[in-house]
Length: 194
Image (tube, rainbow, N blue to C red; front, top):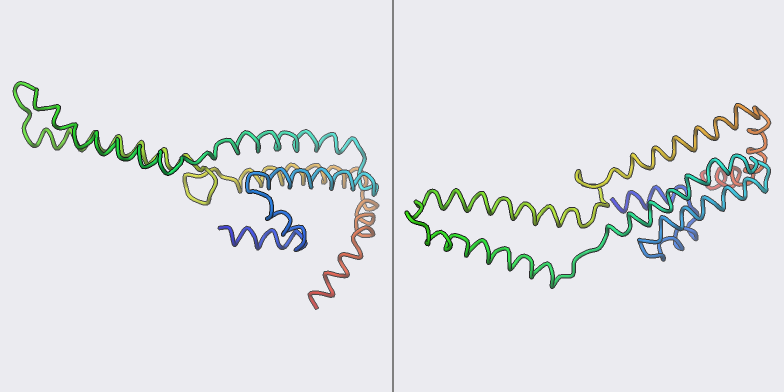
């Protein structure tokens, strides 16, 4: 997963910027990317690609993303190993001692009843413990993790729609302006590919 993401980032970012991004802690990388997006929007204004009204449409989404990123990063609070070991020890100890509590019953439950009772209790408690460990870090590529690709696609689609509105409003002149601003980078990319 992380190698694939690094390869995708390397397609977009120059090596120097990619290295700077990876020097940041994992929690601060999304905020750095949002800051870069705001800087790109400011550069687009300075270069005349679009005006402040367009940025007023984009900026609230970036601020919302920033706020959500901060609140989501609070989810990743891994338990210390001591707490995890303590939790598991107490859970196993409880599950082992639990059948002993049944000896005070009158009449005593049969062995099959004890097995069924212990299977149900163990399944419930061990399932809760496993679920707690999975919920501890919701960021990954597993089936129970947050669908970050979908979130990114929604943001991509929104930005694409905003840019599409800009193209419809300004027409061919906007495309020519973009090509003029990026002609040096396009030429350098073509020379490195050849």
